[in-house]
Length: 363
Image (cartoon, rainbow, N blue to C red; front, side):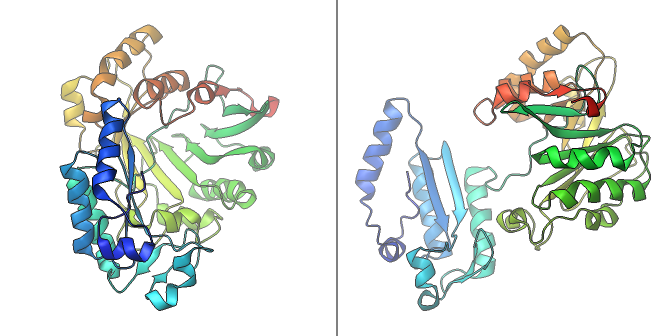
């Protein structure tokens, strides 16, 4: 339901007269039938202000319409009336996709940031989410992990437990999924080699977002040194679309994830997250989740029987939203976990189809 705003001046400039009483009546009728309406709001609209947007948030909150709420900055899209009248309306926007509004007479650039913060505070949620934690890297046959897309094997995860010849990796770069993950194991610490791999992959795929995962590296990865090696086309669409993740503009297309149990390594900063490497004999309990809550997630790499880990998933899935994000090293367990916790978000049959090849050249 495209409410967008409750502010009369903004509705008038959008040429979208809205009867709020009728809107509420329709929304409540849907809710009575067990249908949760998705309500869209836009901040930065011509004619609106930060105060007006706050009133819109209050309207949605007070009437309990936030179960499926989406909040966006105004996008000044080509072909729209706002784009054609942008000069008259005083709209300053990014000329590159997705054409996000930077400021307007009613919204300063600072107000744009404050508007999103206000929405997240009002509804205690994040509207510009970070990439989900999905760092499985073990298939039944070992090696790289592929998915089948229309019968064609596409490389989803390049697993480097040891150095491999770049001549082997080069042809693989033409078969990857988007997004894509590269895993560097403990034995692959040479930054020059890591940069060569990232360049090899991204050179063929300059628009594909990457996640670089370091498994127990032993020392802090220098992401500032590695990032330029990824030959991503800049500014990338995600650099623009996810600009609100951080206060300053910059990289949003390459995510760095450190997986370690070494408490001496503190991996923080833009597009960096630290995940605990759980390889203990048992499985995490409530006290463990609480002790690790300061981290960005936990990767469970357990040798316990598959059935025991499944029972753990069944138990834990009930309160997964109350603990730090969980991922499983075993791709089969990870697919099952995603099906238990976020079935509406992912194409679970495709994820269940992740398979390892041992020797990726045999794919």
